[in-house]
Length: 508
Image 1: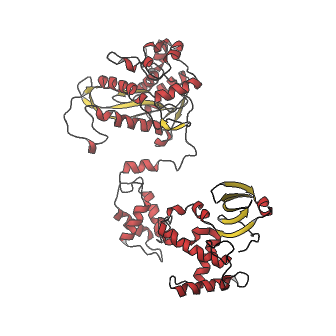
Image 2: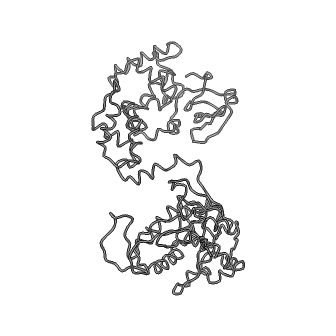
Image 3: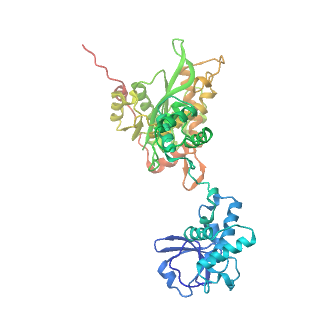
């Protein structure tokens, strides 16, 4: 076995260094990461390694290199055994001995690098395999495998037909793939059609192009299924358009470190029928605001339709303590909660009879392009309270994903348990004749549920880096953050409430 210094080191090469047999498991510039037989790793400079006394290149890939080679765990045991079998023979062609040969083993006469050329050893190995009858291998095939092994290591001996990372388009004509991709893009804003339409559409797009042969329908349908996976091309048009509006990928995850630093506001139809004051039965809209740092629902208001004054009202409720209501259990009071009630009470006496919902003053509010949030009334209210208003991009719900998910959670955790629930669409609606709540009664139930359930429910988005296995509730997160971020009470006066109302010009 050769011990000469190699012209280059590769991942998987076995070397002798510091009187240990080690494996090269990583290369970065002039740094070499080594692993010994026990799995202990170290990093050394390449120049120091090559000049070290006792250094020897043992040539070949050890079993530890196989276990550390990235990406090979996706292959089955049968495929890996085939690659390992080839490795033994390729190593004998390269070094004269197999990787599992005992220390001090001498090369066989036909594979001794001192007396034979590389081509002669490849010919001898091909003849040997043919004589054994186990493999019909030509010298050309053996040379190709040897070259791939020298550049890619064990991964180069994997049969490409078993590679699960092959393109989803397979061997389909590239022009057919490109035409199908264009047809799928065209369908984003169009009405939903079946796969047979896309077969016709691709054929139409490729008509007249010389040398293009359309695949069979079965092959095309398999290709269409792979390329349209997750895009709802033949499914819901609304979902398809919503997915198309998502950004390609965020540069970073938006985070907030203190209560009120970033909040989101939105409205959505509420999936419960109510009885209005005039006796008419209908659905209402839910307007909500959520704090990103604590996931606290600072306010939620039910209204027949969302107007500018309703958004301003939501803002006022956000900076005002939630009062305890007649009939509520004392367990819902702030004094009985995990919130630091006594310390906050010294700053704001309004919290003496408050429910266990934090009072959070917004610094920045993210909203969509709805008329209620873009109105002069809401903008004036934010400006009066020193709040920065940040409109989201048009038709981009991913700019405010937390409030989108929170409002959906209200439907799954609260609305479906309320009498009069109708589901999110007509196809989910039943025909049950249930007693209905009035809008005011439903508002009372929602306020109580937020204090009792939502604020004390562990939230998957609230995890401490020191204890990633345990999720905390919005109230617990607020209690932790308020210790470092502080709390700024804002008591609105009567004049402030008047400022939140819409201005109307009256001619005298």
